[in-house]
Amino acid sequence: MTQLSFEFTPTDPAVPSVDAILPAAGTGLTLEDMAQRLQAHPDYRVLRRLVPVTDHGTPPDARGPTVQSLRVLILDTETTGLSHASDKIIELAMLLVSVDATTGRPFGPVESFEGFEDPGMPIPEVARQVTGIDDDMVRGHRLDDAQVLALLQRADLVVAHNAGFDRPFLEARFPAFADKPWGCSFADIDWKALGAESAKLSALAQDQGWFYDAHRALVDCHALLQVLCAACGGDGDTSSGMGRLLRAAQRPSYKLRATGAPFESKDVLKGRGYRWDADGRVWFCHLTDEDALQAELVWLRSAVYGTRRAQVELERLDALTRHSARPGVLERLVVS
Image (cartoon, rainbow, N blue to C red; front, side):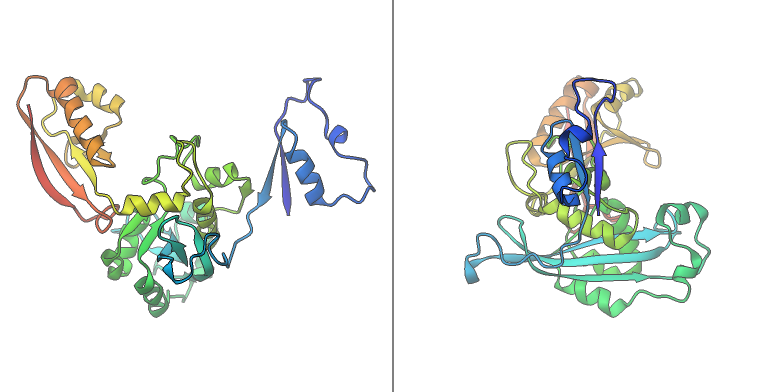
């Protein structure tokens, strides 16, 4: 199925009509022929329904046995709500794929898992509206623990789009997920720097020319895999999203809490991108590498603390703790 998405101003006489681009009916053109003609015109965009790829073949630069590969487990959950402490998983989907450790390019067959789980409670209306999953669909079902853990055991990295949501749910249901490194395709890739207007998965897919029926776990997994397979070189680096995630998983990241920041600095901190932790009553930010951390400490000294001697709290995170509900390694740094 091909969806044609026309982006033009109908009242502008300079913009041609579809009839001016496509020949009259009866010329033998297929839908794909018409789509390609429209796509070649600067005033039109064409979106195609995403077709899951179940086998990525051999790597384009196959080097035989010298290829270093990793297995990546891409997953998505649908749940009864937002709290991993009180809500439950109602659907889980996973794709296990081999990738070239150097380039991030996938190869070989894609193994999949999909299953429902009865949460033991009525599915709230808001969850039914978002997911399309109702009580009848999950009644009496349980995720197959053996299948889930068998795929997980073979994975070198677990990836989710918004892992900060999925990871705590899965660690609560399957504690073994806490023993695997995780990557987040939403937070660990700077999509804005790559030219994307939104890091939402459906928007990233549309940037690649695809549409799909979102908010069902398995199709979301296939969409994410194909988005991550595509090159995204808006910053001059032509690596795929998967390649960027593999590199990010090897680096530490940091959660910096501006402890003791004066009240009058709240607008400055908010404008800088800090968020307010109501429980800890502190402003905090996430930093992706050591250079960003050092630059942030310099900024805090000049813009927030001034000549005051202060301590900030630093939480060092790696792929085993990042995006989980578990803390990383805590330390205090003097800012003066």
